[in-house]
Length: 332
Image (cartoon, rainbow, N blue to C red; front, side, top):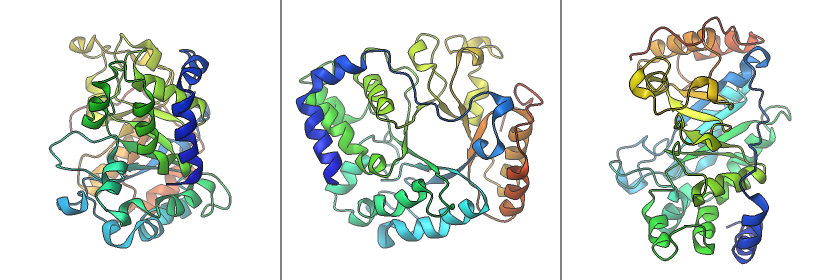
């Protein structure tokens, strides 16, 4: 563990009450990216998405493919990430970078701790060394790159629930220490953090306080997916949502979704996660449609045949066209 963050854990644990008082309930997201559609360059609206945990059927490697379990992170970054950066991409999302236990279980927030304790050294070691140069702009002539580390659901993580048995509020030194330890390498690399299944976190919850604290430390935090109508404290944060769910959860289009916040309520960036259709050409065509018909950011795979040509064309477009408030097509 990196010395700086180890010191942070100890300090945070010892001055927990002071931190709670300091952040209160008023911390605002660090929204460095522009949110007005007319002012958003196309380079901000493209995120190269990489599925890590879940990319392999083999549980012995925590369902991580790409050869990471055998070769480590440096070859993955060099072969899969750097080529898109050279084409102009400046935002990257890595999904469950430290893997899964059984794929049938919810994604763990403390997947890094699980992987480290399980002896998966190739998965846990060398992460910061491989990714920090990406964030710092080593491959992009000094231009910084946002890397979003998308991890699991902290409020239903069994290890965190076990801690809460002795402290029902959850906001304890042990809980906070494990929370920081779980994302320590991502923070050390300067990454943003994506919180899975976090659209209903109460304002007084330990999970939301953690998001506030991370934001106050300068790490952009993403909520998944569309927040509920009853949690306005989440409306300021950027949202990640699977494409189909985002449009189906819109209460202005579907009355059955009235329990959700409206598009007009949300003040942060909307990131559409485009996984389907699985066919590469069809997915790129849908990406093209989303970029030209909506103001949203899109995260999807940007490798494969034809991607380079399309990327150059998209990135040459200075701003979003935003010709429609949402695309007509919803179903997959």
